[in-house]
Length: 112
Image 1 (tube, one colour):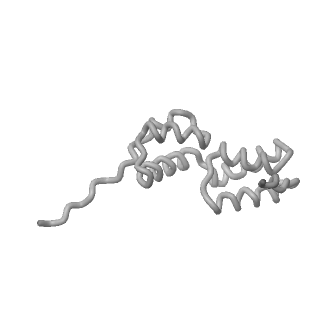
Image 2: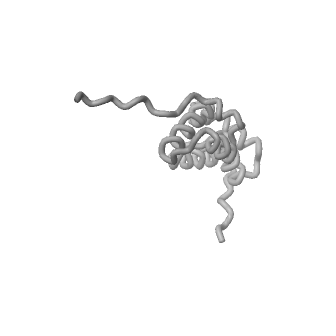
Image 3: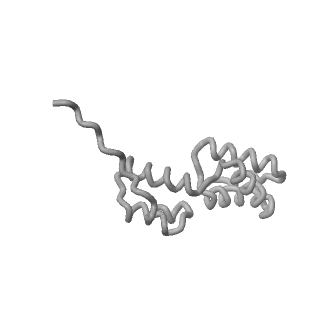
């Protein structure tokens, strides 16, 4: 069984933990808030760290949503309805299906 995550008490420690998580992969604001909440008892501390990450553009839900949709549409061959369902699991509102098309541009044809 997995032990509970280490709890951080200062903003600097929690911010460093957030940066380490972002080095592994991108996170939505919802995911990062959940991640930090498990690592700090002070909700105000979590809010300050999330605000600092957003201010420095390390967290951007619009950019993350586009990357998430593009990656899942291309690598997993998922359509809009599958993306719609899976996007709710990472904390996006159900409007992700209104994103621009994630299909790649047409392939150039070779001269015959």
